[in-house]
Length: 394
Image (spheres, helix red, strand yellow):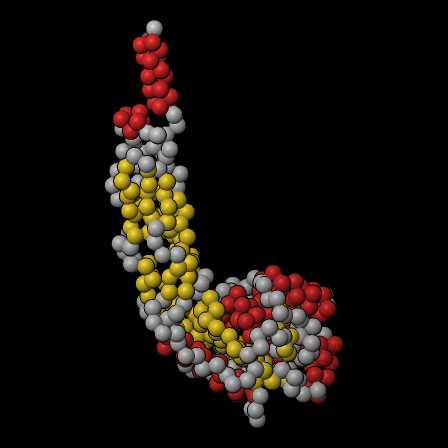
């Protein structure tokens, strides 16, 4: 009887051990959690006063200088948002003219009043017809305040309604330190910061027609004739835009853009300079923007931040030796020396066995605005547990 009970207990133990749930292999991170572009951080020629910001499209903000948490008047930089909003609400293909607007006696009177007040204007007469593109050219090249108001009324019925849309768009773009009070920037209550203006310029330069117009040195309008881009450095040092602005309250302001080489990649760099002073505040801002763009061209690189073969994960199962998963390829990013990023492993749920070459997770490398995803594969097979292990496990 006792032997029978022992035999029954042994059978029961075998059955319990055999049918106990088998733990599945798990994938855990086993490498670095952060990366850094190698090299010494670059020295950036920030302006001595005001505020500034420098950014690389697709990578992010290189840095800032000055009180960038304190909004200040931005003068005609306001027209970047005016043009951006018009093109978002009235898309215009490159080279297309768009609808026409017939100017009124009120538009002519507005031009004369603003001219008398010393504002930046473009000549118009009652009965003149301007296409959407011509209005944008007048807005962005000679920086016509009167055309900013014409565009606002054409789009929203009134400048006040258009300004509400400008502020809504600023909020949508994450411009947290920006407030628009008018469509032209003549009102000193229109304020922003250098990082916010960089953010806006990066969005605006995504629109081909905006990019095309701000790169024009001149344009021809029906009444005003040939008008010239007041961006003095356009075409110099590779600069392809964007907008200047100056008033007594704002000082010299400049948002500039240029293509620069970063190793094997060509990237768009944006600089914003606000609140420049001196005898010629606008030229001070222009030089500061140019210097920032030139400096970026000297330190931007495409560099490896993780080498192929780096151990990055481990596959563990209690019945087998761990498997080390290595990075299948070198991960390179666009950036500058000292730029840091984070690594995050997303493991896959595995079955009781793993095949050689099976994808076991994704390694995410985030450096600035760059998000790279690298599939990770098992270096060899991991078989299911043996009967002996299943029966003798604790």
